[in-house]
Structures are given as structure tokens and as C-alpha cells.
Amino acid sequence: MSTVNTFNQSTIESLAFYVYALVDPRDNKIFYIGKGKGNRAFQHAKDAINDNDQSLKLDTIRNILQEGKQVQFYILRHNLTESVAYIVESTLIDMLTYDKFNRINQLTNIVAGHHQWDEGIKDVDEIDALYNCSEININPGETLLLVSLNKSYDQAKANGVYQRIDIYEATRKYWYIAKNRPQEIKYLLGVYKGIVRSVIAVDSWKWTTISEDGTRFDKERCEFEGKLLNDSPYMNTSVSKYPFGSGGAVRYVKKED
Image (tube, rainbow, N blue to C red; front, side):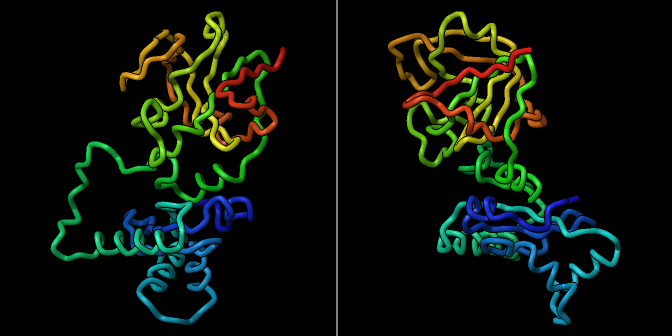
């Protein structure tokens, strides 16, 4: 159940224009697609309570509320221009309403769409956690390696060695660090725009001079292996007080016992 029913100004600025879905919690079906900015996604539920207008959308919301449940809000794509948001909205509406499509079948795409692990579908609680975040609180004795995802997080703009299939692959490689450092690192934190977007609990590592796409490095780079922790307390926290150096892509952080 969504706990967020309004976005703060920081989140609004980060979202820009977005496309959203209203979902009925009784059957998890989408009943409305819209576009907007600010707190537009939440306005329909408020209108259903405060206005007497009749429409299938508002009546659906009222029925949900009368059963003691809440509309679920999902942000499907964000950080869009208004014109792009309009195209995304209209395309999704066509896909979900065109009567010649069998809408029961699930998509069989092997690879998810661009941005699916950065600006892709998130419920409003996830959006709020992503952009309305607190400062990182490092556990005593834990050594963290912050790695910059500035060249790989936005896959629509990523090139060559920075093109990755998911956030795990974007975070775990290829990092130029000292040979004696990997054994100290407990968690690898992927950072984009000063916010932790991924956390990997490090299990092992290896060295390489060539990437999967054939790019050769002049010095050995480190590839980490481990478990992606979506529920880590480090997720969606700000590391603005631990900036990368000029042109740097890694930073070690440790809080002493």
C-alpha cells in the first residue's frame, strides 16, 4: 500500500514531466494512464473525494475508497519533456485499449526497455525514497567503495564499455583500484548524482585487462562478484559529503569502530 500521497519540491524537480498509472488494489489492474508533473498523479483521488463529477475513473476511485482500500500509484517513466510524456502516454493508452490485441498475454521481450532500471516503473514510495533521501549513515568498521555510475546509469546515453544489461553489471565493473584494496571492501555502492542507486555485498573479485565488448585497459581493472541488496539501509541515501575527486570514479569510505 502506498504511503506517499504528495511529492516534496526536490522530488518534483527530479521527476520533471512523467507518465503514471493508477492501479486498482483489488485486482492489480491499471484503470488509468496519465501524464503530468508535480503532484498530478495524486490529484484524481482528491477529486473523487472533493468533487461530485461523474466519470468511470472517479467512480472507480470512489469504489476503492469505500472498500477501505487505496489507489496504487505508479510512475512509469519520468524525467521527460512534456512532448515526450505526451507520446509515451498516448502509446501506453493505445496498447492497453486496442481491441485487437490480446491483453491477457504477458510480453515476451527478453531485454527490458531502455531506462527500466533507472527511470523505469516505480511505485510512488520508491520514487519518494529515491529523490527525498537522507544522508548515508555508515556502520562502524564497514569499508565501502563508492563507484560512479555517471557514464552507465543512463543507458540511453551509454556507449561502449559503459553499456550494461542491468544495474548489477553497471555497478560491479570495471574499476581501477589498488591491488590490496578489494579484500577490505564489504559493500560496493553505485552512485549517480550523489545518491546511492545500488548496493552489492562483495563475495569475490578478479582482475582483467579487457572488457566484454573488447575494450582493452592500459592497467588491470577489478570486477566484483556478490549479491545485489535492494533492501540495504545504504540504498537511496545521499553521499554528497563524500564527493568523487576531479575526474575520479571511485572513493573509499570507512567509519572507524
